[in-house]
Amino acid sequence: MNASAPMHQKWIYRQHPTGVVGPEHYELVSTPLVLDLSDGEVLVEAKYLSVDPYMRINQSLKPTYNAEPHPLNTVQNGGVVGQVVASKAPHLATGDWVEGMLGWQTHARCHQSVVRKLDPGLAPVSTALGVLGMPGRTAWFGLTESGKPRAGEVVVVSGAAGAVGSLVAQFAKKQGARVLGIAGGSNKCQWLTDTLCLDWALDYKTFGEAQQLSDAIQEKTNGVDVYFDNVGGWISDAIFPIINRRARIVICGTISQYSGGLDAPELGPRFLHHMLYQRATIQGMLARDYAHRMDEMLRIVGPWVQRGELVFEETVVKGFEALPGALNSLFTGDHRGKVLVEV
Image 1 (tube, rainbow, N blue to C red):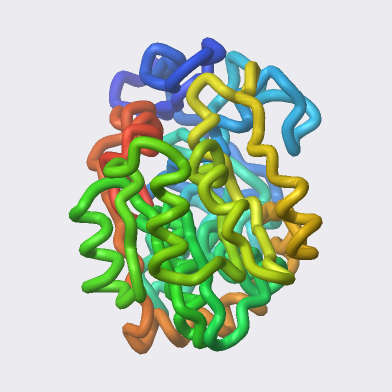
Image 2: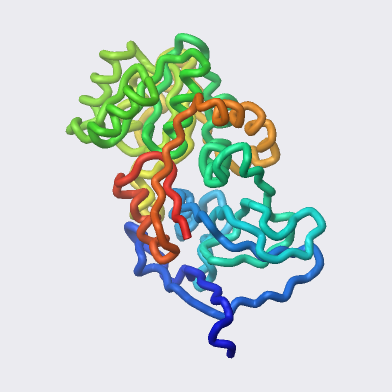
């Protein structure tokens, strides 16, 4: 073995977590990098890697939107932005920036069809994992296709300081809605009102029970027209009783259940009678359902990013070895905006 040969590092998913996911569920493996490529293939060196709540969903032993849970003893799946370092693909050259679901590894040998070429002149390449990537697609289509906010309506967003929630809140403001964001901590709430210019923000940590939060929302808004739910649990318990006539409820995520509630879920809110009384609708949405419409979203949201009309904070963690800990941080609330790991 050539001691000077470049090494291929990868995080292997070894153990199913029953609670919070962490480094103990992974193993960092290093092997010599294989450079042989077939026609149509490229070798991509990772620069930014994504950590996202859906990764924990995919580890559930119960049925989710995947037929099977993430298999053990394989590379953890995830989005990557990187540069082509070798190519046998006619449309990709060495030095090109690309994005794709290449997993938690420093290098990926893949066919050109599984990556998307990026233009680094349009926006920072890291945005392909955030506002101009899957989180942006989730926020845009989840709000506009399922939430359908109208000017003057009240939109409530849980997890409003996160990668998806912060974009949903801003998109709703652009639609002329009045927006209330729910987040954990006074600093996040101040950021929501001062920086994102939301109409209201509430710190869920200051409320002892769902009824108290419900009363606070009702006092500010006189009811909810659109609820974009990223959290689930008791926060949703607080909102269903105060929805308005013809309300639209968008279930994007239930992160409150991801650390132990996936395999043994808590009972959901008893909300069906409220849905009946208000003739409301409730709809789940997944980003994958709109992957074929990515260009449509980019045509609308891309210019807003270029003109500085959207806030898209990134929490960048340094070091490939930090990936499991960065994923864990999604469930402790120690971040704002999109969490990325920079190699």
